[in-house]
Length: 205
Image 1 (cartoon, rainbow, N blue to C red):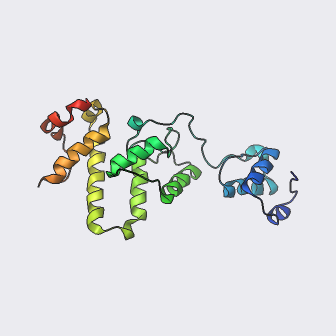
Image 2: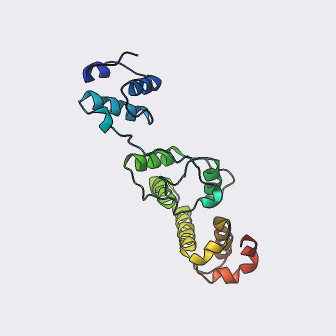
Image 3: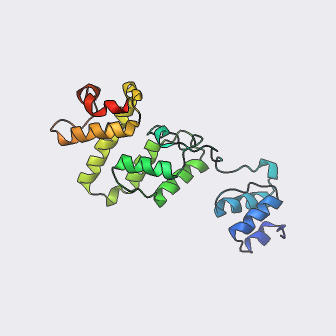
């Protein structure tokens, strides 16, 4: 494939993504990423930057994907093995209390932003909060309040080291949340709930 010699020559031609990948390979540039990212590598090269100094904008994905049991609110989005796969789909379905969960375009944008900015501290919990803030103007106020109460309940549940003894911790949190939600008590997590509802959750120890 003919390699453009100038930036002007490159920008005057329309390239499909497969062609951009070939160009990057010929120029020894990173070959993974979105079409916009591949374009940026080539532009940077044609502006005089050495190919050896042009690095991928995003981290490479971990070779091993996380299983359902390994995902929680503190799971890092990058370098942990987390990905938008079937295991994560099941986790989000349980988290939001739905039978079927579909990954949204907003989720992909938020994760891609973290990859581009190398934000290695961003967690699954942060992703959920950003999703909710994104949709805040479209959300019914009472539904939104209930969602935040559940989020805070789960976050506090996972902070309690005593909950580490349970398998499927999110399932246990869900059982306790239903007990609290149906009661007249304040909708927060308390350590004594583990003892109070031990009969209902002991099978997960």
